[in-house]
Image 1 (spheres, rainbow, N blue to C red):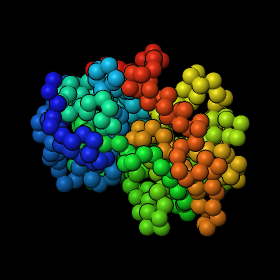
Image 2: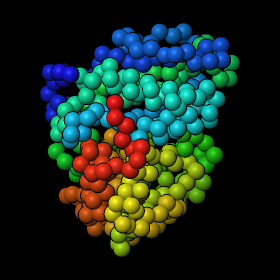
Image 3: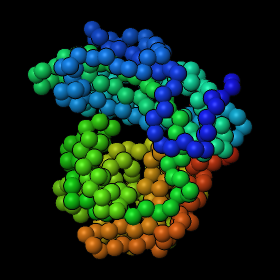
Image 4: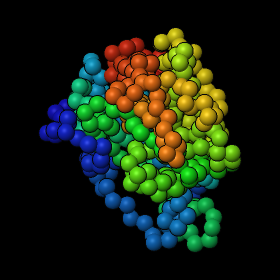
Amino acid sequence: MEKKDIDWSGLGFGYVQTDKRYVANFKNGAWDEGVLTDDANIVMNECAGVLQYAQTCFEGLKAYTTEDGRTVCFRPDLNAERMYNTAQRLEMPPFPKDKFIDAVKQVVKANEAWVPPYGSGATLYLRPYMFGINPVIGVKPADDYQFRIFATPVGPYFKGGAKPLTLCVSDFDRAAPHGTGHIKAGLNYAMSLHPIVEAHKAGYAENMYLDAATRTKVEETGGANFLFITKDNKVVTPKSNSILPSITRRSLMYVAKEYLGLEAEEREVHFDEVKDFAECGLCGTAAVISPVGKIVDHGKEICFPSGMDEMGPITKKLYDTLTGIQMGRLEAPEGWIVEI
């Protein structure tokens, strides 16, 4: 298929309206078959549940062109599973996992001309989301819901290379110990907007959130999990019931053990041990790994030996290996790459 006439290398990480999106409705206790539509607009009642009580959740994944010219997605089954679990926690009817994956494939196929070519640094970002759509004035779950997926081509998360970031330790809490930090609910991100704006004003790229109960353990940032490398090259990621189970982070931990032969563990990470790590990174769909060079705790700086110029050596190996798997340069574990 002929691709759209776009300056793919000039794309930023923003919304570009594409040709088709998928829409399914939950009404009278069941999901309908779902359809592709040209209409990018949503019409709902002024009292819709999502507008009154923020009953909404979302996912994020990418479609892209591999080195050998295939159009693929990376582990959409895990996005389907995570959204299923999120919906249950928010008292929303879970969208069936098989229908989720089928909808992803439909949207990518219908927007194939928008899938950036290999080597452009761009990808087709997919945003599945669900929300309560019928009028709700009392505090209760909605009765009717809509599930949608749209696609938008996006450029690389970093322009000019992955330069290490500077973070600050936040005075705000990202999630309560028994709250919704472990699911991908829209309300979690609404809560993080004020802290990230304040961090940006102060010159920082992101916040490091500590656990709300004791403020002694590392949790995550507003939109990514932490990954640390010890001085003896062990990969460590924080464990907590209020951390979002990142698909990228889980994939990187597998890559560390099975591809690179590194020791990797998920455990509680106390903030007072952060200064002893050799490398630090943030992992997520957008950038795979964003290196961190410095964390500032109320004026006190923690500078990682990997420095402020480039990724640390182990972080770079993890990044190169996972992106190699995603782009078809390295053989993928079974089920990780879904061809469209």
